[in-house]
Length: 92
Image 1: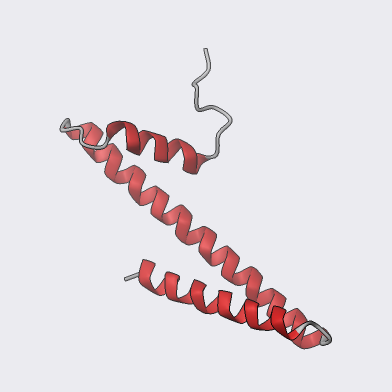
Image 2: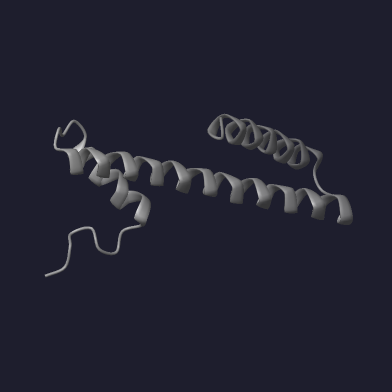
């Protein structure tokens, strides 16, 4: 019999386990919650880094090709600033 969480993304499975076992006083389960939370934090940090890199690549294309809407350029720059700020906060 398969697990009810099979086929779901890793992040969803980790978050469900964290919700299920938060507040548990048993040593191994408390350790699992801590490790799962660290994994969730790393996944979110990696996703943010990927998004930031994609924005950087878009900016490079804009500078090479030109002719893009200035509003798009400004939005991309603002999104990159937000990503940089979030990454700086996450790595503190």
